[in-house]
Image (tube, rainbow over all chains, first blue to last red; front, side, top):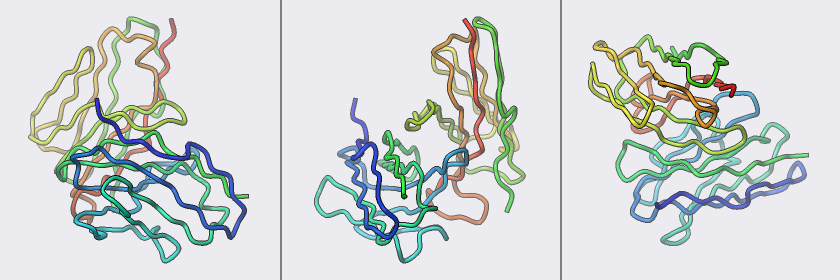
Length: 112
Length: 114
């Protein structure tokens, strides 16, 4: 059964460093998403991406964040200058239509 | 804006017992999704409900959406240790958001004791 994959599974970085989180969505899906979950808190929407552009973003998704689909398979989330409060589990999701989203296993980001 | 409220926050049951988890919204839901999450892992899709009064089942898990589309319940029959995890309800198209953005409840932590 096809699934969303994410790399790396864990990332430790120093405050102020740039990180790139990578996702491979399910192959015939057209909509792509990033969510995050700070430890002990709710899963929060960051951004959705369709037809090679951002379709919606939350107030969390400020200028420090960017997304890209550099080729036909990868979908990336870049954080330009990480802050301590960016420490969280980041989930990629994809969907064929604007309905059921399938989530990846997540990347646990720790900013020191 | 009103968010999704889940109850209970946590639940401990003996293996073989039935249980129900609720998800409530103050606004009519467009789509209601149930996911399961194991601690520190990804979200596994369980079921989607869209129509008022809709009910879906998968193995021993049944989810319902009420007629007013403001409350959903997830019922597990004859629980097993494999059912343990965090159950999340999510909704789209409400709370002033557009498109497919999902808003999630806080989750219900289920423990099933053998």
